[in-house]
Image 1 (spheres, protein in one colour):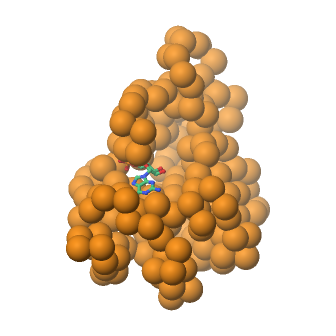
Image 2 (cartoon, protein in one colour; image 1 turned 180 degrees about the vertical axis):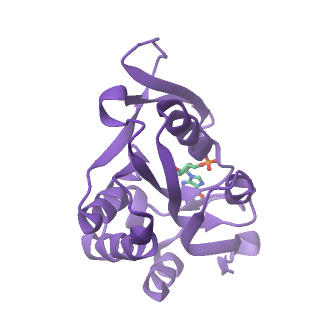
Length: 189
Ligand code: 5GP
């Protein structure tokens, strides 16, 4: 999506050669019109898979997942992040390393909102190493639901995450692919 690329070039801040700050677009401030456009794009890409629910992780995935679910006319569920892992028969919990914070967090989805009849479309903001995605995939597997695809706004192709998820047989579609942040330059694939 050309508009998103232009916004990333104008507002993205390279923190290191692995981390791109997108606070003005995705992770702190959001532009509702741009987010709705991205949601429409994901809905178009995945409508044929007939998702029954859109699943994401709080907090930065929520806006895009909401926009996608609105277009697909299905509910959106967000996995909650928890400080402590409490074993709870009513929810699925998984422990995932956090790429940006350098800590481990636990993500949780209530069993009330995901069932084996569901066809889940997973939506997230950015993929790096794929740990968050793997946590969500484990939760979907445990629920018995089908994962019909993974839509991610920004895929950093110089990190292994998206490739490892595709290797699991999951369809991964991204809106933009960033191939490098080296030398202070945001390079798109
Ligand atoms: P992963 O689990 O794939 O290593 O990291 C995914 C999560 O870390 C994303 O949900 C995203 O919020 C955050 N993240 C990963 N890379 C970046 C980055 O370059 N910039 C920002 N702002 N967040 C990132």
